[in-house]
Amino acid sequence: MTAPTTKQPVIDIDAVPVGVGLDALVATVIMGWKQAEGENHGGPGWRFFKIADKENGPIYLQDHVDKFSTDANHVCEVESEIERRGLQWSYEVCLLHQVWKPDGLHVKRPEGNFDLINATPEQKCRAALKAVMG
Image (cartoon, rainbow, N blue to C red; front, side, top):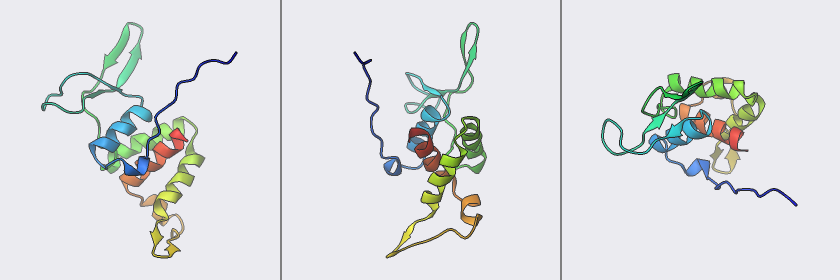
C-alpha cells in the first residue's frame, strides 16, 4: 500500500507577471511566508505575514509582501534563502537560463559572469523559483 500523494499545481513561472504576482509566489514558495485572510492596510489585495516560530505560536512580523521581483535589496534575501537551503548550483543553472535569451535564431551567451552578476531582480526571482520547485 502506498501513501496518498497530493498533486501540486503546475505553475508556469515565466507567465507569472512581475510585481505583486511574482512577489507573492516568491514570498510563499521560497521565503515561507503565509497568506492571511482579509484586507491589508491599503485596502483589498495581497496580505502576507513573515512568520517567526516561537514557543507560544507564530508571531506576525510584517503585513505586506516585499518587492522581491523589482528591488535589488529585497532579492538579496531570496539569494540568502537559496544558499541556506543548499540550492546554489541549481539556482545558478536556472539563472543562466534566465539570462541566456534567444536573439532571433541565435542564443545570446552571457559575457562571463557579467550577465549573472547583473541579472535583474525579476530574473533572479524566476531562477530561484525554478530551483526550489524543480
